[in-house]
Length: 312
Image (cartoon, rainbow, N blue to C red; front, side, top):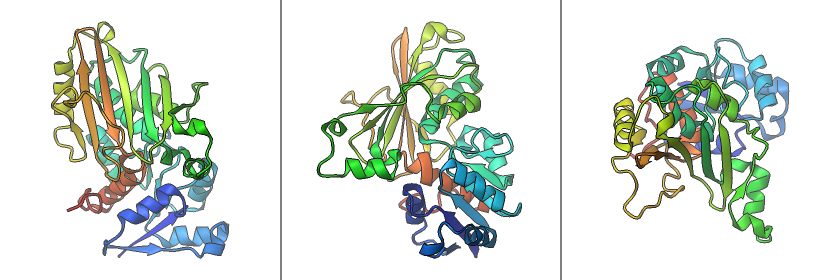
């Protein structure tokens, strides 16, 4: 029986990981006593009693936990702390065989950020395939449910007397210092950090990350059909990442919460001869957090990566 410990299991990501473990009889969940959650000696004991430990913690606490862990304990870190560390596997197996192989072999895996997952799903293959030059002036726009904003923000959004501006989309990270930017740039091999415009909206979970492109700045003239075909072939063997066959839904709208509760990701390619728009839709708590973490666990365990992540 594989022993699993979640350090930070009371947070949103930790709770969602627990949900995805319901009905599994191949793992044993180790539980820390409530009054010892911040006792470092007890945390260390729990971590080193496990085969796999999930870290659902702030960055500093995640680094602290890694320092406590023996080398043979396999760590899956959902924080920002190790996503650009070359010694850690980046937990997005669909990006390529090399990503998947490193996840299989590594004892240290960093789960991608939610926005970064949508961003990388589009930009990484475009750069890899030579469609987008590495020095392209990338910009991205994103809308997300409020569940990614943390416990305090969730409480405000769900309060009966919340401020009126919480009824509307709220733009943030205006200084261009969003914590996902370093991994967006490094993982995708960009020479310059992208300009990023995220908004938190009044729905619980789900997101759409959008990538506008000027065709004149690509390595040669590509249309929407060319990009769609290239991405479709790139993700042809992926179960969770799908490139949609049409440029946009029949009604012309792409909702942000359609994949809430799943580990799925959908990529849409639309536009005209001069300007394209690529959109990646996912659940910020699924493929953007807990679902991706459990998918990595399954791969590391050598079992079907879909285990616990589908309705089958």
